[in-house]
Image (cartoon, rainbow, N blue to C red):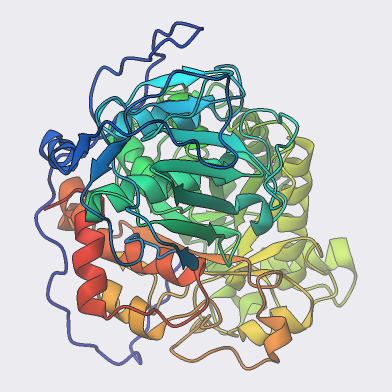
Length: 593
C-alpha cells in the first residue's frame, strides 16, 4: 500500500464502531434456472430476501375481483380479465442507498410484491436483460420470470431495454460496455399496480433492480410514480489489498455482491506486494505465495463481477512493493551505495527486471478478461520507489544515476529512469489488451526530461510524500484523477502511521470527489473537477497489520463507509437525509441487522 511515514499528521479521535455485527449475506451467485418458453415460470432455488420480509409484503397485498386494467405501454397479447391485487398504499419517496436522484410522485397505491406476480421480459430469455430479471426474481423471494409476448398483468414487473422516449431499443450484447453515465441511467415506473424497469443498457436495468430490491427491504415496495436515476461519477468502487492478507474467493464474491447492491462498479485487486503474491502463475510459478487464488477462482470472481456490471482492475505494483517476487529473483533487487538491499525495490537499470514484470503483465492481462468493447483497466502502481524516497537519490543510488545518464543523456535523472520504466510497463499492458492505465500519484515526477504517458490516469491518494504533487497540477495538465484520498478513503488494518479507520459519517458529511487530498476541495476552477476530469473514487482496504482484523470484522467495518461513498459518487448534491437516518436506512437495505 502506498503510505509514507507521517509523523506530522495530527491525530484524530477514533470513531465508535458504526456497524451492527454482520449477519449472513442472503445472496448467492444465481444458477441457471429451468424455464418453459411459453408463459413458463422460472422457479428459484432460494429466496434472496428474508422470508419474513417477503411474507410481510404479501400480507399487505390481497386479490380483489377487479378486472385487468392494463397500464399504458403494457405489452403482450390479450388475456382474460384477471384479479387486480390490492395492498396497503406505499407512501413517501423510494428508500434506497444511494438515494434516487429524481422521483415524480403520482396518485395511486404504488407497487408491492404480491401473490401471483411475475417478472415479464418481452425480449425473451436469451436477451441481455435475462440475467438481471432472474436475479431480481431471486431477490424478491422466488418471483417467477416469463419470457416473450406475455401480457403484463396487475402486480407484474416488466423489464426491458428502452430509451428516454420510452421506445424499445435494439438488442445489445450481454454486459454491453457503458460509454458514460447516461448508459447507466434507468427509469422505474409504478403505475396501475404494475412496475416497469427500463434502461438503455443492461447495466441500467441492473441498477433498476437494485432500487427495487432495496425499496422492498426498506418499505415493502415502491410508491406510485416514476424514478429517473443515473450516477454522477462513472468510476465508483473499492480497492482490496489481498497481497498482504489473503482473502478467500467466497469472501471476495460476497463483497462483489455488496458493491453491486450499492451501485458501485469497480473492484481493484492489489494482489502483489512485499508480503505475498496471491494469484496462481504459469509464467513464474516460483513467485506465488502458498495461500493464493487459483486462476479458476479468479475467473469465477470475474464472472460474478461482470454479472453485477463491475470492472475488476488488476494491479501489479512496480518498481516498488515487489518483495514477494524478488525473494525468488534476488539478482534483481535494488542495492544502495553501501550495497544494502532495499526490500521490495527492483533494479530498474537491469533489462531482466523489465522482462520479468512484462511477463506477468502479459499473463494477467489475459486472465482478467473483460466483456467485448468494455474498458480494460490496468494499474501500474508506481508509488514509494525507495530510490526516490531519499533526500539525494543520485548519491544514494549511483548505479541508477549512471544508468539514467547513459539512457537519457548527461542530464538524465533517476526520476527520468523511473518514468521511462512505467512508460515501458504501460506499453506492455497495452500490448496485453489493456486500454485504461492508471498509476499512483507519487509515480509521477516534476521537471523530468521524460514525460509520463499522456493517457495515464492518476490514482491520487496522498500529498505527503517527498516532493509532494498537488492534485491541481495533474488537473491543469489535463489528466484524469481518480480520488483515493487517504484522509477519508483508506481503511488501514491496525491503524499504523497515524491512520485511523475511516467512518461513513465523515465521508457522508465532509467528503466530495473534489476533496482529493487533506480535507478541502482541490484549488482549481470548477470546470476541472467535473465528472470527465475526476471520474470517480475508490475506497481502499489496506492490510498493513494483517492480523489486526478478521475478514468478518473487515466486512463489518467497511459497510458504512462504502454506503456513504456510494451516495456521494452517485448524487453530487448535499444528501437530503441526516446521517442518523441514512445509517439506519443503509443497515436496513443491506440486510444486516
